[in-house]
Image (cartoon, rainbow, N blue to C red):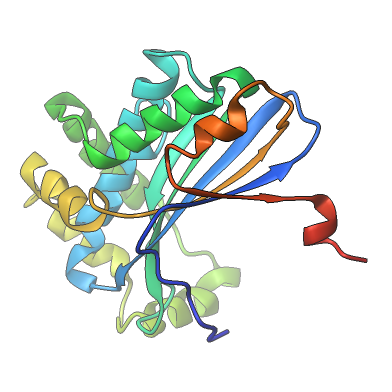
Length: 219
């Protein structure tokens, strides 16, 4: 569907006041158009940055600081050449840790830690996934069309695999600087606003709009 996508020139926060024992937090930023030359670096970036328990985001926010039950961040790859890509991140945390968790995520989004061992692990992981992936009979047609939409006459995975050996950690750092570090975000939060000071503390990140369930489902 071609619909107007909101430009994100400043950080806005939308909070659904809901009786939960934890906060659910989503960060979303409109990104750049699809660039086939970035497929390999995008794949490795996601694995390195926010793809699993060994990723930078998970280690920094959950393992080191114990601020969230779950934490991840990715830079999406467009499904076709006419649509933009997005950066999105997620946090699930205790309500009383909401502010600290958001501060930590914003810090990692703006300043990506460098770790050569994690980078090499990410390269190895992507190689293993691509080498073991198979297109089954039932998915051949959908796979063909998804590649066609991105301008490929064969599988895009072939290009990704071939490009992996040419990547260095500095390519991942540059990708982050160009696509994530300077972004502004729409932050969507589901949380219990009876938590003392939560609403006023959120205002330090940007404009805050409080929503109710009736705003979202007015029927």
